[in-house]
Length: 231
Image (cartoon, rainbow, N blue to C red):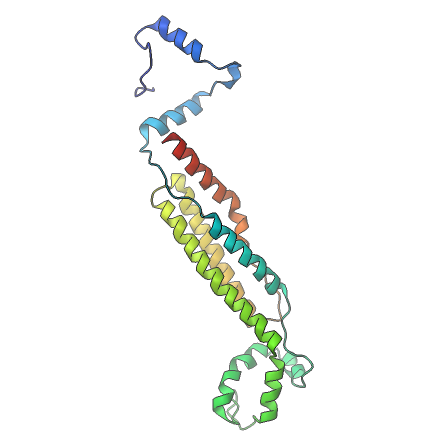
């Protein structure tokens, strides 16, 4: 029963009936069903309604999407070194590009000793071959992916924190906590895929876009709006 509602003429059945007739919409089909009336009553009288002053940050969402678009192009690009260099064929045949690249920083301090086999096999000509293979175009694209990864990670973490703040005050039917779990998994997976691309630049990779959570995020926006309208 709707015991907490105070109605006009509730002590007089004829007057109360007339009041109901005057309030009925036309056509009758527009009258809310009992379930809808019950849910509205519970929201207004039985739940501890609080106004939610927080909302999904559209700017953060858009920033993540812009980074995703830039990353998508680079992740799909086959990034290789200068294949016109003599040593390129050997590196390619051994599939050792990442292994060689990781060892390059040690060449300056190891003299003519190979940082891989510890034998005196390194000379200036070989160093020059390595530097030409990993040319400026290659280095620039790898650096761009790294910068985008850091920006993506930073904004993603901030976006999660913003939604967690909403969860702390508003989480009907675990709507907000569920999207936090989904986003965390999405962002972690994306970072792992980007790292894998940095290790295998000659292979294509792709990440799942935050756009895949658009429906769930829209539901939270609507739930906040409905809550504040009832408040």
